[in-house]
Length: 550
Image 1: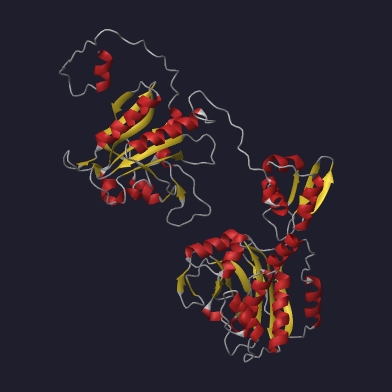
Image 2: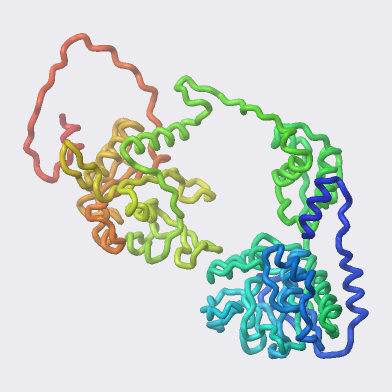
């Protein structure tokens, strides 16, 4: 609600009246009485940088949730549960800071933010016993885990109808750690979604004080103290030239207009010569690039101010408007494969160590990058070859292809194209029965692509994982290997339950030189003289050697 009110104030050009956090905290401290307050620590500094734990006692467990609060919670899609829980949910929806209420009587010793480590299981509030990963971020006491931090509380510390001492936790958790918690346990909550997207780092003390005050007013609670760990939040500062905004948006905005737009969203803007410096407010941690500033300026003044015009492009004699030679090559290959019945697929580039071993990648070919924040713990590595992943769509379509860089963000990565042929390669019809694809089809397609790209190349037999020994062709241009095609090793086919004779071709496009300009040959006016020659050669003689001899 706080964020929506701020946006509405900006849209209507009205002043935004924020909650007075200092006044609220001062009012709470005036109500402090002597009593036992639970202590808090942060054992894992990467998982959280600040936490506030406000302790209240003498809570009347029979105090009902006010009708106005229940109605508002229902209107935002939340179910009223009990007064303490409803207050934490209400404050979260009101201010945007997730909170959690612990039964303080069930906390043994100190409450701390830590990784799961030795803890193996946790039963969450949805009554699910969850197996913990060693890197899960938890809230725990001296003897047991109490909650999946920023995601869901535990059943062992749940506030019940008999709870009289409550510890209200408000923290600023690392967004990546919470996203990993949620992903590992397939558990998404209102709290986790907010932490994943980023929460105002200065909001925890205000929101926890607000919740404590509401417990005092609505449940007769007595505030007995706060334990906290804090770290000053760094301001996000960005220096830019106002001309960059105009260049990005395609519309002219003066320095005064830019300053006005940024001030409306809470930024402090300073000018120095031709440059401007923006200091983002604590609730806008996303303003880190000039493009982010440009987006806010466009949003403030309206997108209708940006003219709808086509960008200027260069035309080429080949008819490809504004395409670079590499783009023309990629488009041509995509069309050629589509004409042969292939479907372009976009698969995740993530693999497991088991997949790498299955495909036979060893030594230098097995060196890869481990992902710091994998989408799945089963696939923590980036693939080193285009083949892993291509086999997935074959159950739905017998031919598929992929054209992309293996690692987009790593320097000097070549563009690759790979395709898989599995099952029927030619459909049945009046012309005959269906024909299953085999290694020769993969070799033919690779040959056709290379003929279009470079013209002359050499084909030799080779052995290279993951292809079948003896059914793998290597294509060379100027003595350098640029492509491979053939049948996938039976071990891989069996393990992945692929059709027999599944075949794959793979080309490194950046390793293939661009063909020189084509010189048109004169039209021959005489009839062609054709000779058919049959030769007997040793089985070790390659087709390339025969062609060169002729």
